[in-house]
Amino acid sequence: MARSYTQLRNTYGVDTKNTATANLTQGDEWMNDYHRALLVKADWPFLHRDRSIESVQPTSVVTVVAATDIFTTASGTNVLTETGTQVTFTTTGTLPAGITTSTTYYLIFQTSTTFQVASTYANAIAGTEIDITDTGSGTHTVNVSAVTTFQALPYDIDQVESVYVMVGTTRYTPRPAPSRQFWDELHHSVSSSDTPEYWFVDAGKIALWPRQNTDGNIIHIHGKIRVADLNVADYTTGNIDIITNGSPAVTGAGSPAWTTPMAGRWLRITHSNTAASSGDGQWYEILTIQSTTTLQLVRPYGGRSLTTGAAGAYTIGQMPLLPEAFHNLPELYAAWRYWAKEVDSERVAHFKDLLITGQSDLFTAYGINDTSLILEDGMSGPAVINPNLTFSGTIT
Image 1: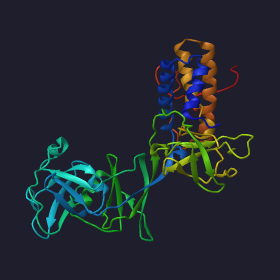
Image 2 (image 1 turned 90 degrees about the vertical axis):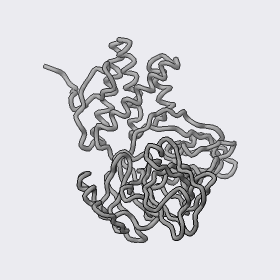
Image 3 (image 1 turned 120 degrees about the horizontal axis):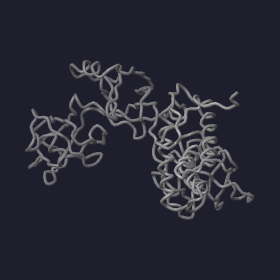
């Protein structure tokens, strides 16, 4: 059964017979330790996601305001959003006083379309910008250094597994560069093309070779996602006003105040005996929050439609990344740790048996290329019990 963070926390309080805030907080820590440890122990298919970013040209036309030393690009580019990025400038006329065409500068990020520049990397990190005393003349262009070809990965991608790039209607599938040395050797000179041949990931960023010539090519990234802490309480303010069978669109009423961070959480419309307001009781992952009262689901809604004025009760919850049938495993682990701390052997054995059985079933159903885990008593940290090192039956 699907269980949100709040439900797991409440169950932990019941299972430990201790609902004190300090104990619930300790339970959160144990649940998150186990959740992270378990999810790195196999190539779980349910951790794979598709994400995308847009390519950006390595150059952009800019203007500058001398009074603030702030440059503004013609359009936002995530290549220009990291402080310390190396850039140079060219112009059809005269560059603004304070910079020259033969010098490398270091970007100081301001917004997605604005930045200042510093004379050294250290100055950029310190926020010490160059004083620009006039705007120059002609059309000015900022050029991202050939060594700065990396773009930030989508926020939740932990390990990139494959990449393809859409250029118009053509799909290109570059290969991963086999090593850093190989990647560096590719860059003996600057090369730009919309036909990528290799991709490489370094320090949470990705780059293509040759670097893309054109803004707006969609770079599709398939990878394993990062495991965030379970720490967000269920949200139930307001109600569901409109949701239609077969549609991913949801409209709320009663001042729900939905917010952007709720994307990635899960929505459940309460199932009840009241036909006009009853949902199907299933959890649906939220794709985007479009406003304080509208959102989109990852999958179309499968229950009966609710129409204007339905006032259906709902819950938005933060869910474990495990399959629904195994959402209770982090709580079972935390309860086991609690009773081990309390030296209650009967309850330790009870929760340990439940945990071993659940974890063994998880590996049987979903485990791919799992790594061996060490069987422990739960007393020395967030170790995960390896079902391959346990047995059931009678010793004779």
